Image (cartoon, rainbow, N blue to C red):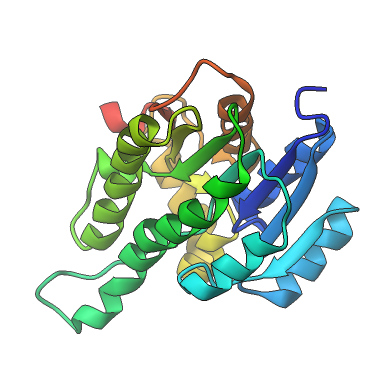
Length: 237
């Protein structure tokens, strides 16, 4: 198996794309650690996944991230799935409402990378999460667009700096994950149908489809500094 004997850490691994990445990694023989802010979600994910290590971590807290990796032992691959949609027009509201987008995808990723790399050997990898908003920003969602663009550019810059550790990013488009339940509620399926009608594939990606791209980046030793788009061609229309 491609990940037999490897240790995979998924930050934001209790649901959605992170959960599916942990599940696929475990199927391929990896030892898996999932980290999340929510104890209840971790417990639910652990029950479904079987034997995995869990840790409650706010990855925008540098000290908490350091404590996590102080106990992990060797780390082979890291996927940083954590990061949420943050909307709002730049002239409205408080600047503080926009900070979580940058804090999570940028500084949270920095904290994880600084803590993880000393535990990694040549051949290891880090995968970040960008997004469709980098190429297709929309009014009222500039914080997320800036954050995903930063994550994607970080993968390119750090691939050079951290070699022989490989650094890549996956850039999902609209993906059917629990994150959207909280945003759209009962209107979610209607929104999804409208979006799907406008993209080349005529359908949204599943969390598993995005996760399979993360696994591909972990297991292909010749790929670094790349961004894989899993958006149904949405950025072209």
